[in-house]
Amino acid sequence: MESFILFIFIILVASILQTSTGFGFSIVATPFLLLLFEPREAVQINLILSLVISIALIMKIRKDIDMGVLKRFILGSIAGLPIGISVFLLMDMTLLKLGVSIIILVLTLVLILRFRIAQTRSRDFTVGGFSGALTTSIGMPGPPILLYFSGTNTTKEKLRGTTLAFYLFVYFVSLVIQVIFAGTSREIWVSSLAGLPLVIVGLVLGQLLFKRINQRLFRLLTYVLLLFSGGYLLVQQVWG
Image (tube, rainbow, N blue to C red; front, side):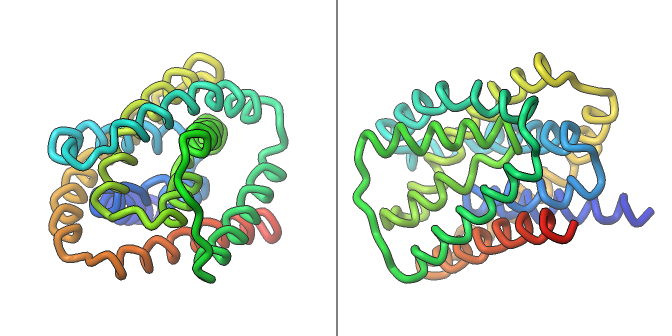
């Protein structure tokens, strides 16, 4: 019963954040889903439900998508996706998560200190590659894009629109790759189906929240989520 209540809370909160910000589902859901499921199951449930959110919102947010950046993210991710699944199958996941957590925390602190970078075509490709690799390895494509957009002072509308559109591609391809190379199970799909009503509620509440968030609050929320994801992954590996 406690596991079921935790599952409801995780999916609902993550859905609200994903809908209102364009990121947040994998950052919030994946670490906690790993408490309830095996890594393969947690990653695939995250991919399925995140894909549903992107499909549901794509028509509504299409006007906010930066198509040039989106195309470069997608092309970059094509190189990163096979690297990520190779890491998932071959590398010690503890070492991977430890490394990712340290990188997220250091870069977030750099952003809080108001370090800014210019957006370039080559950096778009690179960020897409890192995001693709993290999607198929640990199911968390958000941190590279979030760090990049925060460093370039991207507006909340463009960030949400471009990120959700990119997720539509990268989550679908990552799910196919995961199923082919890591396999799947009935529990994954049943759990994902159970989470769908919660995602629908999260879609409605997230849309309402998006209208009330100004740019300053949006950036603050970004830093909090990044520090949370990095900190949680670090604690999980060191003391887990």
